[in-house]
Each structure stands twice: as C-alpha cells, then as structure tokens.
Picture: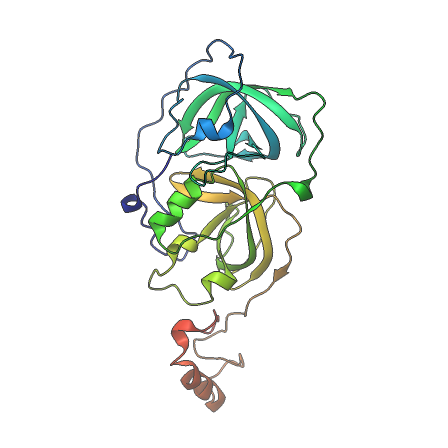
Length: 303
C-alpha cells in the first residue's frame, strides 16, 4: 500500500527510526479462499501501480522464484509468521509496480531459495503490504533452480525526501534490496533492529536536523540473520527483501557474510578527543579545528 508523503514524517531519535506508527483497528481476518483459478496472474499485475491492489479479496494463482523465507512479525502478529518472498524475474518493466510479493502459506513452506513455485491464495493488504494469504504452494516441474548469486538485487538508492522514499519502497516491496557500504546510524536494539544509510550517496554528515531521513533504512533480524552493530560502524553490505510493518519499511537481512568495521569508541567525557581521560591542549586544538566542518564531518563518538 502506498503511503501519502504527508503521512510519513520520520523524526530522528536515539533509537531506531520508527517511521510512521500506524494507529488503526485490528484488521479483519482475510477472506477464505474462493474457487481455485485456472490461469496465472503475474505478480506485477497483483501489485498494481496504485495505493492498494485492485485484486484484494480475490483468489489468484501466481508464480515466481523464491528469494527468501523468513519468520517475520507484523504489527498485528502475536508471534512471528513464516513469510515466503517470491519474485517474478522477468518483471513487467514498470518502475511503479513491484515484481515481488510476500506470501503466507497454509502449511510450512519447505521449498529452497532459487526454486520456482506456483502459489494460489487470497490477495490481501496486510500491515500496508500486498500479501497472498492462505496460499498453497506447488513446485514448477522442470524449472531450473536459480543460484543465490544470480537472484536480482535492487540497490537501495533512496531519495532524501521521506515521502519520495516511501513511494520508492512501495514500488519495490517484497523485492530483494541491497545496501552496499552501509553506515550504521543507530545501534542494534534488543529486538535485533538497527538503522543504516548508504555511506557514499548519503555522505557521513550528521542528521541531528533530520536531513536526508528518507535515506535511512531500518534493518531487522526477523530473517534469522542478526548484525550486532554500534553507531558509526560500517557494514560491507546488507541484503534482504523489503518488508513493512506499522507503516515502516525495512529490510529483512538475509546475508550473513557482511564484514563489519567498528566505528570510533566513545570517550569517557565530551571533548576528550585523544581518550586519555582529561581535556588537554591537543583536545582543544582538535575541537577548534573541526568546528567549521562539523556539520559535514564524519560521525565521531567524541562529537
């Protein structure tokens, strides 16, 4: 579901960027599946280019390649639920429609990443995300498996504007996204989430004024991969499907090969640049030297 720009203000806090906190009633249960369709409906057709799928409540049959399987928890889930992320590798060439979607199956899914499946289920906008509900899965006979390395991954080159960023994410929901050269903005919480930006395009400027909030990416360990990081750390890459909960887009991290470079260690007192436990002439000179460039300087725990 596309979020209007006016409704997605994301103030920076000392914790993970929460984005829009949805305030709405408990959603109605998804309708029971109708008669099984006999023709395929492509994932981009189900997604559509508007706020919500025009096929909500309709039983459809679609197919695609499995890109991720994760136990994610949505805003209205008491417990994590298994979600299968499936992508139409051919796509429809329309930048406004996602080529992937999240699917919740009736039975535990045992298919492998890169395998092709046909899914039949009810289209539902769940937690602001187009989802196939009550789905059954059937492997596509004779289909050649796609290796993880050959799965298409879209770079998360997000607009700085919050509203434009939300529209970009909506048009790519369910698709595999990647953040290469990630700079950690907020540390890993007890829930296994943190916030990062792509360092090169975003820059290492400070964000106390809320600038470039649209480029912040929330990352969750719901997919089984957890990165324990601190503010200022660098990660070589973050890869996973684009999910959403409580109006906040996030990446369900899937890659466990991210290399971490630790950021600067916080000093015992503000201004103690050299970390010797006291303010010296060296510290004062360093502080004076960075005042003019502070707004555009790198993240530094001493700041």
